Amino acid sequence: MADLDELLALYESDAATAMYDEVVTEREHALQAAVLAEAAGADAVTVAAALLHDVGRLLVDVAAGDRAHERLGERHLTRWFGPDVTAPVGLHVAAKRYLCATEAGYAEALSAVSVRSLAVQGGPMDDEQVSAFRALDGWEAAVALRRWDDEAKVAGLATPTVADFRPVLEAVALPGRASALPTEDGPG
Image (cartoon, rainbow, N blue to C red; front, side, top):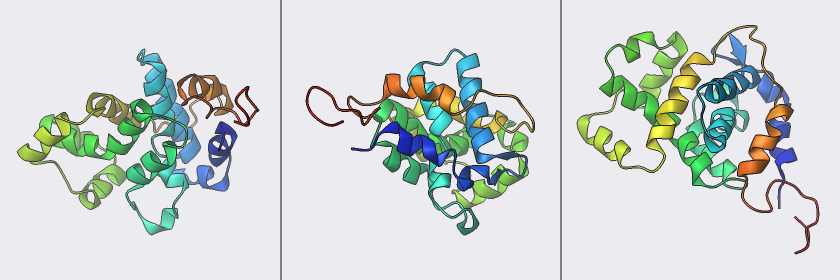
């Protein structure tokens, strides 16, 4: 069973040093999103989702384009976390589409890179898609996550390290998934 070291190593890899939105690295973006979630008073599962929301980008070749990084990330994170963490990760792109459809001025405030990716991701939702999105578990957390995602693009912002968020991740990990240390029931 994989422990959190494997997951956290992704954020120390070369992939995490790739430029996100041409302003911050993938690692900086993740950390800024988590800091914003904490500052907003989000619960631990939502802070974890904010930190991990773009983990799918660390798993695919950045040059290959979007490649549904949100779904890839959601699937990957099920190794460690339940749906309270994984659902907002899997829905954060849909949340952008939702906000473009439901909030006046939202689309105009997106970064140039987010505008380009919106086209690849299906554009703003139609009314039927909005209703279907609102019926999904985790949609509200995904909308909050999306807002932090949009803001987490500040060059040079000081943040804690990825390792500093390990206690949060351990607190919300599925039983036996935070550590590979042996337990009373056997290896972790």
